[in-house]
Amino acid sequence: MDYLVIGSNGFAQMGDSAFYKKLKVEMKVLLDFFHHNYPIPRKFKTWTYYSVRTFNHEFGDYQEIVLWYDCDHIEALEASEIESEHEVFDLFWTWVRVIEGVDLEDEQLTNQIKDAYIQSVDISKGEHLSILIAS
Image (cartoon, rainbow, N blue to C red; front, top):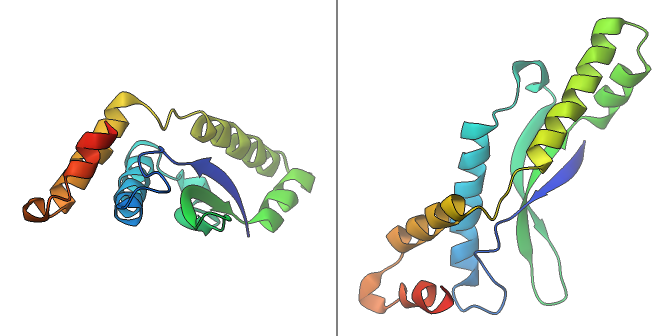
């Protein structure tokens, strides 16, 4: 298996005291967004899926939405002399370009993440204030 990084919204910022809580909410909203708006086409479902992947960085771990795919299967489709299999190969990469072109920092998507975060915090502890300060 191999993966392509789709990305993140940037709502959760390293150094923020609520970073990991915001990151968890951001990743859930983005994963739901892709499943709902860009579902895996039926032809790819057995060898392609979305997930959240954690990456290491010198300042701490962070997460991104990734698209996993079976690279051996893709290579076999590309090398195939069967026209329909080569068409699936082309269709896959056309679909990937659409996925990679999604604006993850779109205002509406950012607001969805903010709303989901606010619903997840304990207002009695003032956890919601970090979103107000960052905005």
